[in-house]
Amino acid sequence: MSAGARGRMSAGARMIRLQRCAACGTAQYPPRAFCHHCLSDRIGWEEADALPGRVLARTSLHHTHEPRFRAHLPITLALVRFDAGPVAVCFLTGTAAPGDAVRVRRNEDDLLEAA
Ligand SMILES: [Zn+2]
Image (cartoon, rainbow, N blue to C red):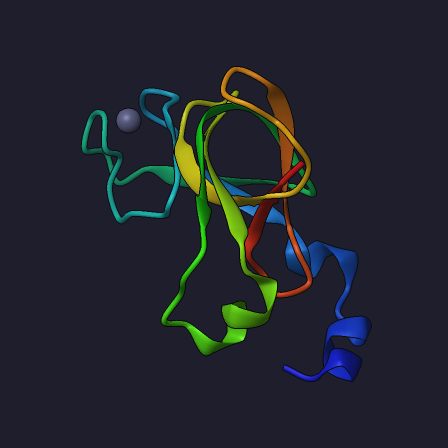
């Protein structure tokens, strides 16, 4: 996607979407056809511009096979548990350590970013 096309996207286009089971209330990410807790297919969506969570672990990458990330090395990744329950791997900006509160957003490249 070109920078111009990204600039024309609405703010809603970068929302984080979590699934929430209508049968048991469990939130899940990434999306699945069935609830991972009760196997119901009554799955709804919730979306927000950012989700609160806590860092479970962090690590730094000094090598990548993905050409688009090479200019950004070293890259810091964090495993983040959203307050809603699901866990996701996010790019980490800033100095958050395990246990610290962060907010997760989708960045301009549509990747999860915690700060
Ligand atoms: Zn469920």
